[in-house]
Image (cartoon, rainbow, N blue to C red; front, side, top):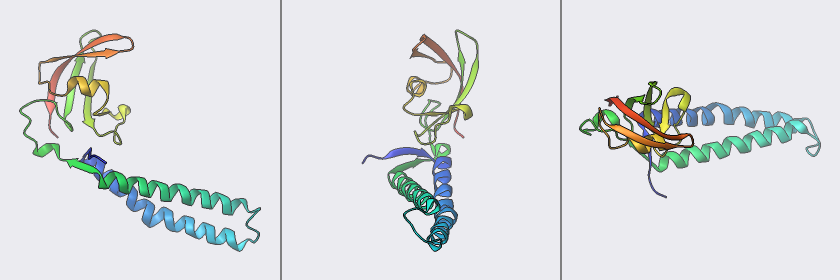
Amino acid sequence: MSKVPLTVRGAEKLRAELNELKSEARPKVIQAIAEARAHGDLKENAEYHAAREQQSFIEGRIRDIEGKLSNAQIIDVTTLNAGGKVVFGTSVDVEDLDSGERHSYQIVGEDEADIKQGLISVTSPIARALIGKSEGDVAALQTPGGERELEIIEVRYE
């Protein structure tokens, strides 16, 4: 499997979730299974089946996070010398030339993306249009509603 880019903050969030799953959620569900087993007949025990399903979800998520972290290429954007260009991890302020709206985005890995927080995936159309551009450049972006042009106002490495 190829390396997947991840920001330092994204890797920390995944590690924190993994730690929480292993140290809190897993022991709770094991306890719930033990309590449900004590109630008797397992065939008709809804609590037991629900706890086993929850355990399956937790174990699957643990494997998923461990896999992502093992294949991650963690990039610390503060140490990059990109010469003012938009690269993975940078924060970019743009202005839509058609509407005049301003937006701020940070280009992150697919698992970190959250458009409501301004975190866009490196594979998204907006990120692909912005990567390699510098302050003052205009990025053309094809959308379902037609072509948009975004002017890069500021590039930050934070």
